[in-house]
Image (tube, rainbow over all chains, first blue to last red; front, top):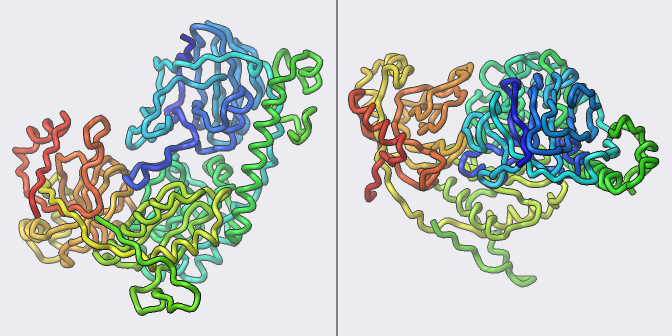
Length: 342
Length: 261
């Protein structure tokens, strides 16, 4: 049995997939990878389905040992570094590790979250349809710690030395929101402030919510509403008048008014904003949000297809053509031979 | 609860039954591009909640493409969607049509008796809440125990039961700044609502007691104890009785008792 053993890791290390759908009516959070795009990239380059379970790192990395056989690995996340047996591997690149090799994940230097995927995926029993760990409820398991051993399904094939997907362009800058559902609970100036001022990500942000500090957002009808449903992206404003953007581990319902909602296409970027980052918001229509969501899904599908095509390329020449580094392929290359993936 | 749907849409030229005066149309509110909130009102009301539960059942029956899951709440139904798959205008039309044609009939009820240790370390806000009202803590507890509550929704955390039926004298706003963690199984008050907590979580609600009952316990059958529509009465438990009952609950026993309404 091939496995990945945890030698050490940061306290925010857990298994995450695309999330748990269908149990929010019982108060069960969807959970799932904070940066779903990075999860998809790590999976694509090792030939897995985009939504497969990977190890999520929060700011700090970790150290692992491969046991029982050969494993294909890839790490994705902003400014993160993988090394296998002391050999550095660029982000978004699949590389092979042999039994006994130490796999080291460095800190996430330009964001918050990074993902380590293994070819064939982890051999885990889903709970309520998902392997995602929800820390506060314990549903899906618990956070990873030294001594843990993650069994791997252990398929090593063509994907182990290939990759080179086209990464969809990630826009930077404004976080897009749709006003509401309770924008009528706020003074007009509150919406003006939300859409024109900077809000700084606070240190006590986590998988449940991203706490922001900026100009006070004044309520006009109090800060208690009869609780209703919330989504990742809901911007709730409690009595201290400072916004909290609910994230993947958020509760299913809440009783604070929600002035606006971050669109689905921008949630990954929101998650990667480090404490101290100044964020700015812009309002868009639902049509614009849907267009952004579809563009993002299309980009991920193209990337997966490109990664699949790379995995089928048999020759060394072909691998060299996409910037081979001792058996590794740079997934960030803007134009691999497969172009936009056809 | 059972749900009945109205007649099929009338033939062209026939009067539209939906045009008859009836309950107010719900508002459809965008929650980004990932959900629509079908909002029947802004207050706690058994009639509103029944409409929510009826719409939920009708929508689940349709199994529309792009609709991922639904969350019934006190007074609104949150419809989670996949923005890349769903046709928003068509979905909104469907939701409006279902809300007009669907109505609640009877609600099957069960009544839970839930033991609670009130005040002290078990409910750290109780003494202050009583003082604010010029009540003795015992009278505050009595007022909380006397009410018959209804589970209107499960949310916030796994198994967390939101209750209607709080004595209006006990209504208390949430704290201005939420606590970063409150004990699991807290009995609390937030605005006009009361609740049976499940797991430790951040919360701005006022803590008045704690129950040994596990509203959510993976591995136990059922995992989730309470359902919307259930009735709840609270029973004061002495601090001395806590350890034994808590141990039993921790071993998987359902220490709340079911009784006929």
